[in-house]
Image (cartoon, rainbow, N blue to C red):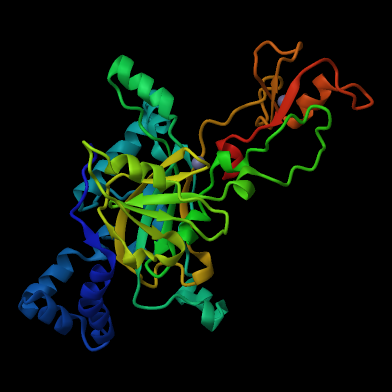
Length: 385
Ligand SMILES: [Zn+2]
Ligand SMILES: [Zn+2]
């Protein structure tokens, strides 16, 4: 079981720190030392010592030519007189990678960023220059909090159950997206950002006419969904025909011997400030009937100028995964976009194709279907990010 924090009421968190920190920031222009002395209840002497010990200057080489280095050069060309232990270890590690190619390959294989195609950190521009381009009514409102949310890929419930029954193991859920959300945002804002292959499912065999316009995806037809956070079901009831997916679960839970009654709220009426969360605790996002995604809050902090300042950028994606691309079985190069059943030409059933190979193999020069098979549009996880 993953470790999690105590329950945090997001609104209380904001009001507590709002008083302590935002006021401190406002006073900062007076004097850093004076403010810190007051806030930390320390003598001015101790604050100055602390400032020296924690100084960012310690990360820089103690040489006359320090102005010649930029920060990226430090990462690759660490000077020998680095004072911090972690920097020395980093230097040793880089030297080992240079000398030992097997070690280098092993490191890169395990490197977590290999599995994440982008880490989209926000760059506020020199002296926050990007802020000027944001219309006044689209700027973030202070004070607010920023929550980091991790959405995982849907779990294969049957396979996970089988694995557990046969081997006593839990399948680790695979991280899909990491997003930043603001406390003032509605839960529906997050829901609209969750990308899932099952939302893109297109019903029906398209083998007779692969060019058929397929604008109706499962997400347009089956719009219901809920978050289950801290024992409360938050249902998305924006659409008139949306269903309360939690109803049957709540009925089941209320019967003996469980006798548990769960509360429900509307997702579209709830902001993140209204939530009580435990960081690290497993929560649930369910949609498309039974597509279940693990949802984890990993961080909560006050909104600062280091975060994107444009409201329209939130939920802000800071990481997305790039694994398990299903390749075309013919060229082995392109991502699969079609899945066929019962084709006489394929070595396996079902079989995956990219668009080009699908048409070359299964249709004649007049675009007529060859043989009896069924074809469906296919989207893997790679197609949605
Ligand atoms: Zn899903
Ligand atoms: Zn292909």
